[in-house]
Image (tube, rainbow, N blue to C red; front, side, top):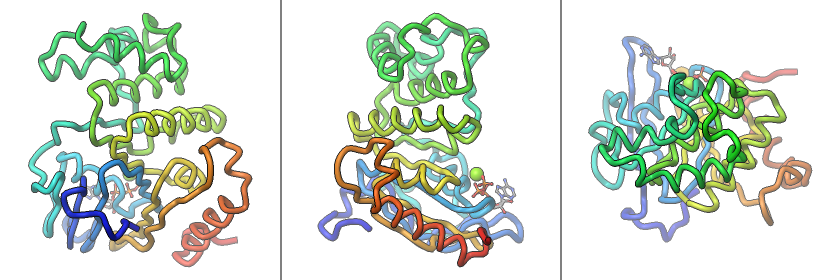
Length: 261
Ligand SMILES: Nc1ncnc2c1ncn2[C@@H]1O[C@H](COP(=O)(O)OP(=O)(O)OP(=O)(O)O)[C@@H](O)[C@H]1O
Ligand SMILES: [Mg+2]
């Protein structure tokens, strides 16, 4: 939940009665959601509940059919200028080395690459890729490629980072490490993050707030602040409060009929 003292000006994103219809499918039905600057929010929910549709609308790549959707208190009209985007497929360019792939957003903004090289090298170092700066994507593992894609999304210090199942294709150990890396990057930069996932424990580990969607029609059915004491290390997943939160979300999915034993 948003703290009561958060004023409208502090909201990065505000959706009110937002709907997105595709022919007879109501992908999103009267969604109300306000996200304050600097929150790390996960969208959690079963397949087809409108998570990607919501993210695409916020990214300015799709438009609501009705209702309000604002970023920085203005209606969304195309991709926000301070947007960083990371998707399930990493979309690295095979003919560019790691450093040039990370520097690509500088080209889109029409700025010289040298101006951003120190930042690119710093980001790559922070995710353990300092020895692979001149490697080409074909020689990297899936986890390394996704790290490069995250560095690219962060190059221009985005105020808003949108991630749609960025770790969905990775093995469990690599995914754990990337969760740790991403959480550290967020703690250092405090950009607003929206992170789409099907994983309850990933959502709880990463987030300051978890928003649960249900399908047909796509609606928000739960919105829970994640307050865990101390630093977010992987061992936090073995703490009783973590178990309480994951049980809460699992029971939500049981109620929806998404999980049954
Ligand atoms: N471009 C489109 N044209 C028609 N229907 C669409 C389109 N995009 C999404 N939908 C429909 O809207 C609903 C929500 O889709 P969406 O991709 O947002 O779900 P999701 O929660 O991201 O699912 P997943 O977890 O499988 O990625 C689905 O029923 C889907 O078929
Ligand atoms: Mg999706």
